[in-house]
Length: 74
Image 1 (cartoon, helix red, strand yellow):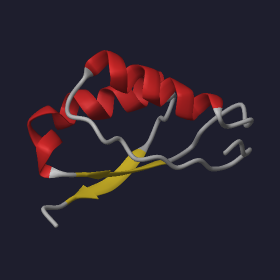
Image 2 (cartoon, one colour):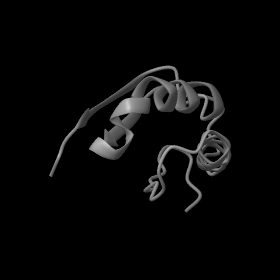
Image 3 (cartoon, one colour):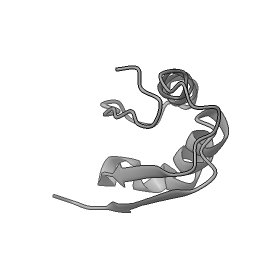
Image 4 (spheres, helix red, strand yellow):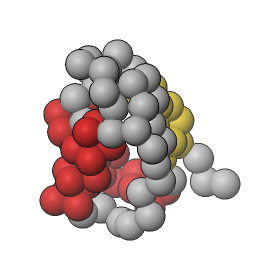
C-alpha cells in the first residue's frame, strides 16, 4: 500500500534487530510524504523485554519522531 499519509503492517516475528530495521525502512518507503509526524504501535508480550529497542528502531529507521500506542496480553 503506497500512500502519502498512512501505512499499516503487522510484525509477526520475535525480536530481530536487522529484520525490524528493514521492516521499518520498508514501511517508511511506502509513504510519499517527506515527513512523518506520528506512529502508532501496539506491542504484544513477546516483545516486552525488547520494547525500548523496538521503539528506537521504529523512531530511527522508520523516521517517526513521535510514537504512541499500547501493550496488551490479549
